[in-house]
Image (cartoon, rainbow over all chains, first blue to last red; front, side, top):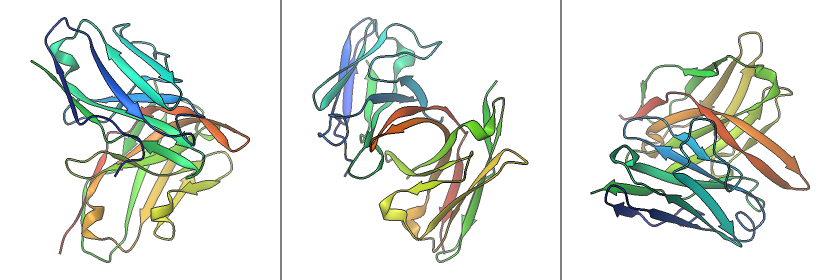
Length: 110
Length: 125
């Protein structure tokens, strides 16, 4: 059981816009920033979004993040086949005094 | 360029210990925290703990307290994670990651910006 809650799966067709939600509580998302990681099949996770809505250098602007209260969202516009991956949200938890992750969302490009 | 290179896969028997290494290059090693994250087969990511390469301060996930030890060797820019009393549910891919962390007043802000390639640890009799 993950501390942060994500839908297990999401899907879309090429060119579509999809969003992935991440729900937490006042001790994690409610009081700290949210990060998103992309994990392509058979590879290590990669930082996709940090500090709620910042993109590291090299991440396309098709990817965007937002946060409101105790929830966060990752949006992917202009969906491409190479976006097919697992996506994880993460945040620091003040009560657990550690990093917590969502259970991950498997994105399928139809 | 920043790189984290981990040691190779290992197979261990239940009750044994394992020590995984993570050699850093391309940045000032002692400036950052190294965190360890594991992923059981077909499962999600789980943070295990972190160690400051500056002063050796560690913080561990509560469920692993007493079984895990993280250390660093600043002469070789290498971080280590040792897990003891291995069980079958410790079978997982283990990752090290550079932890960009800033903490103030009990809250921390940051992220993992670089990851190692992963080390598969299999626990089987």
